[in-house]
Amino acid sequence: MSAAALAKPDVKGFYECRTGSIQYVVSDPLTKRCAIIDPVLDFDEKSGTTATEQADLILDYVAQNGLTVESILDTHPHADHFSAAAYLKERTGAPTGIGSEIVRVQKLWKGIYNWPELEADGSQWDHLFDGGEHVPLGSIEGRVLYSPGHTLASVTYIFGDAAFVHDTIFMPDSGTARADFPGGDARQLWRSIAEILALPDETRVFIGHDYRPEGREPRWESTVGEQKRCNAHLAGMTEDQFVQLREARDRTLPMPKLILHALQVNIRGGRLPDPEANGARYLKFPLNALKGAAWG
Image (cartoon, rainbow, N blue to C red):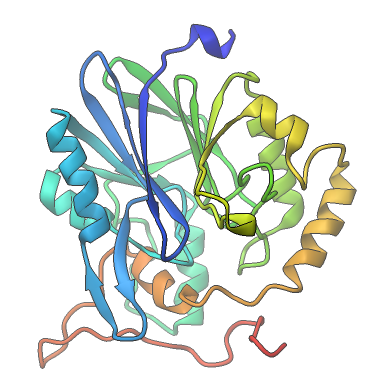
């Protein structure tokens, strides 16, 4: 079946300039039911301040367009921003979801953080999605692709002709996502991307980040056909060539500045650390746990 014959949901992207992240509302025009994908909780690492300005933009859009939130979905545990899933569940009552392999990520980071009390069973979300599982969106039947490589738990959500591919593919002029985080793998990433590019050429591709190469305006939508023809890391590449390119590039990249901040929040479904006896919340930092120092 061609993408033209598929349902065409409405998609609204919200670009978050501090981290280059895009959060989405995808909605069924017929029923006015929607899903929120990869929402961002504001965090200023210099002051340690959190806020809900980005997530509130989503709530305003939902209210202004008469939408009902059916689900709040994360594509993976993000390493560069906090997830606002817990906040949005509190505000909307909608269930949260993420890929079922999040349990493996929790177990991995439980060790890195020396966090014996962390429940590494995915219970922080309402639903854990397996690859191939269906995801309802009003009258539109969505589905999940398991898309590891960037992380162990990455998934792609497909609703009609719209694929939310998170940190696998970027815009064609930016190539692809890194695969050197704990649990990442460049060869797995290539194979996950191949599944995405097997979708009909007309499929709309919505990315997780845009870093605005050469200062251009932010962009976050392309098509499968465009990606196959023009992606700087994919067009004309073999699997082995891609793996060589991706691993060489990753060796030059420092770790994201918020990875140690964000993972302890995001492997708990966007929940901030519990308040301590004085009422304050504290993040925990393991020293020398990751490679990729800025001077390396």
